[in-house]
Image (cartoon, rainbow, N blue to C red):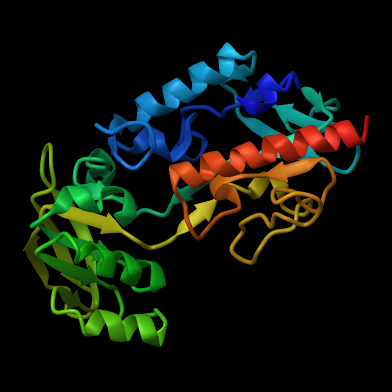
Length: 301
């Protein structure tokens, strides 16, 4: 929206719907009710919100193509961007500036039932969906700081929160562990993995397996939060853009909060944010990236 309104001629290569990591519209396309985005007091469906974003961008002249980028070359300007065969001699597009907004994807358990019920009782974001589970029995899968933070946050709404961890001890920091153990609403299932999520149109229970004894059991719940981490979609930029060990792009390395180590390349949204991971903060950093790109282009004529 901002680059189009600034007459920068933006081309948006939005990915293909063949996989969740390349889903046009990002993670919100897999979210049902969004109730924490400003301007929607009655809430809005994730896909509807992203369609509105898309329509607003095209209204101002942004060109969107539903294609997947296979390679980028950031060693020279103009930058080269390949779609299709990455071994092609010439890039598909040349760009004076690039904004990386490839986002991140939540790591999942890999269960068909989990995918089927995503948005219908299965979630990867407690701050997004916790409100919908008031006075319900829910479960959180994971053992790190993120899982503990999610579990503690969910106790504001849920009747009980069962933390399911495949090991016999948590990986979370000591202070987070102490908080969790001190919370009467949080129960712990050690050495346990989720074998199946039971329910047709909503979550009814979990089929669990004890990794030590092999014994199976059933846990009646109404919600499942998967908190085993996120993976930024940054494979395209390895060896070219500075990243953290976790793969997230490092921004703010030049003039502007979204600048990367390569002049003229900017990063925004969840691809460089592993702290907040909210639609509103991603949109805000997208605005920053557009303004940073506009100012950089102007400064470089």
